[in-house]
Image (cartoon, rainbow, N blue to C red; front, side):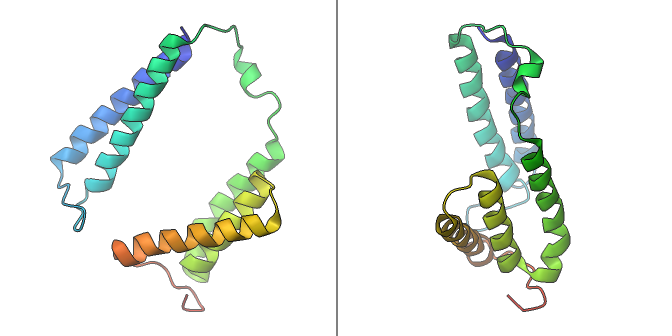
Length: 152
């Protein structure tokens, strides 16, 4: 049994249950008219399922004698800082540049830095993710997204 994963799974399960109870106390609303507790509730359900999966998996695994430092070995810190910098800039530039352009640039950058597949695949994936997120947030959920200087 992997004790760290077991404890982590139980901790996140407790967090998921707490968030689900608190968001259920507020108005959940419906799918077409979500209330303030809608997103936190369903996020906690997903978190609960993942934490149960982690807990069960930890109980089935054999224990390995990994040290904490082994988790950080081989990590490309340059990529970590580039990605953190991009995630820091995104909300700062979003009102100025606009949702469509800034989200496309962020996703394309994250794919290029993180995965490094072919450039056309990164661009096509970034376009698809940007358009699907725009469709979900702007069209279906009627969220007012920043248009930026170009009005996009």
